[in-house]
Length: 353
Ligand SMILES: Cc1cc2nc3c(=O)[nH]c(=O)nc-3n(C[C@H](O)[C@H](O)[C@H](O)COP(=O)(O)OP(=O)(O)OC[C@H]3O[C@@H](n4cnc5c(N)ncnc54)[C@H](O)[C@@H]3O)c2cc1C
Image 1 (cartoon, rainbow, N blue to C red):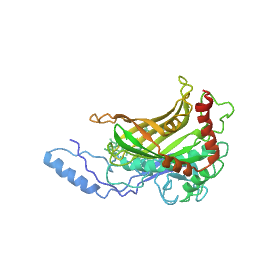
Image 2: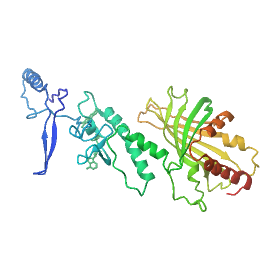
Image 3: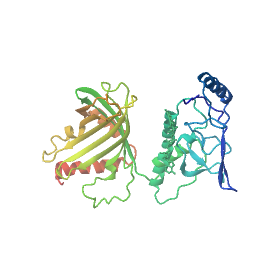
Image 4: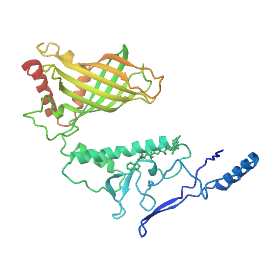
């Protein structure tokens, strides 16, 4: 019979690397309940008429935490609260781009099963990691600067991204309508040219590839109360305002693809297209450019009782919302409007594929 008693230790164990002998030395943490556990096991064994075998000198764990724990300074831990690894050779700095983002970051026993806490910590660290990667990409040829361990370093990175030389266009868009006959509103925030594609050849674009100013990332949320009580947050969204299908080269699409997450844990895909048909002398331009034909699907979860959802509908931008969108444009407004009107002109007036 296997006997198991659970508790948590003092979180004072130590893992040291002994440089002289190239070995890892481990001092186990103290377990204040250890003796009481042995006594309880002995009592049980005696009653059952058996013999007690147990781990020689310490408790064991399947919830290993704190191998590279977070701390306010390098003397008590390996990384800061953002998961950035301290550079012990240069005080108050971190190793750029080196993060801890798993169970080892958590400094002590959480007292309950830790998986969700570990996942939350990893998500928290990933915010800083992604900002680092974006900054690195935007300055491709520039070496990453060593950042000081500063509470606001993340904000500084963000500021650099927005100001600097990257011509990112940001604007908001609100779409309202019905999906599957049920009311739905999308509050979206677009970040065009977010990939900062400096290698795009304006004079000679690759096979139907739209200008980077017309492609971007989408954030924000969707309110669809008939499906989910709370807001559905966009966790990954992409937009292309000038997509062309090679089978219908004269038709231009504005393509939205959003991965949505609900607080219930469910995930949805909202995919939408505004279809701009040529040869109509722009008669329908207003209606076409402001109507998003959408499909809304639930992604299959692990639970077999999960119902499938597969709906279609239309979301529209109303005149007042469109004006608000134009007003909200941040960045190089002129260039964005220039590129957008160029593509509309090509489709509706010049009718060039
Ligand atoms: C038997 C058991 C039962 C558990 N039950 C629960 C439970 O019910 N609830 C709960 O909340 N927690 C439970 N846990 C604890 C939980 O599983 C762990 O705390 C959690 O998975 C740790 O997450 P992590 O990402 O830090 O590490 P891990 O999930 O261990 O991930 C580490 C990853 O790194 C990979 N890796 C290792 N070395 C290398 C290398 N050199 N190069 C590349 N990859 C490498 C590994 O293959 C692994 O995929 C249990 C653990 C065990 C062992």
